[in-house]
Length: 222
Image (cartoon, rainbow, N blue to C red):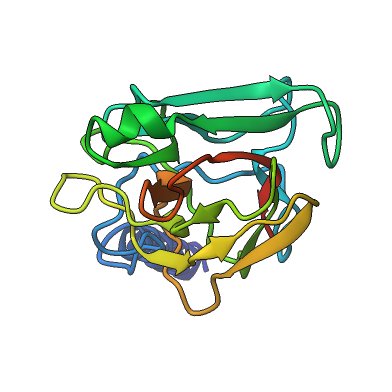
């Protein structure tokens, strides 16, 4: 009896060890091919839901991206992300002043990326796995009305670099009014597994020959 008991004990132990080993090697990974292990997953969201995940909520909020990517160099652009007057939601919004005379003497276009981490053009690890988001929503208005933004964009940062965004989505051109209006960038069907460029816009002097001051607020993924 003792001999049979020892035999079955050893057999069960062998099966347990083999199962553990096979479970630790050669199994498919949940990580998508080509995605850096530095991708940040927001563990605060309940499973099966998404958002809102803020690019910009308020100046003092836990914003996930930084307005640091000035294009081409930023010498004709002034951005105040703590503007406190006539905001749409919360206590602050983003006021953007595009210096048209300055740009006419330079490269005649301008833009800005919200990046993670700041100043990341795809040559540094960072970004977020935003899988599950179906849209990016934001509020915008012009100071006078008629300000023309050539495009608003999600992703598309870092092409040709070591850590490029996994996809891109664009709307535009957009002609702003002098009243707050909500805009949506459709993200359905997009690969959002690695996004360092959370939000951006681009415009130029041809679209805005005289003035361009505009406001943004409550920029978020949902």
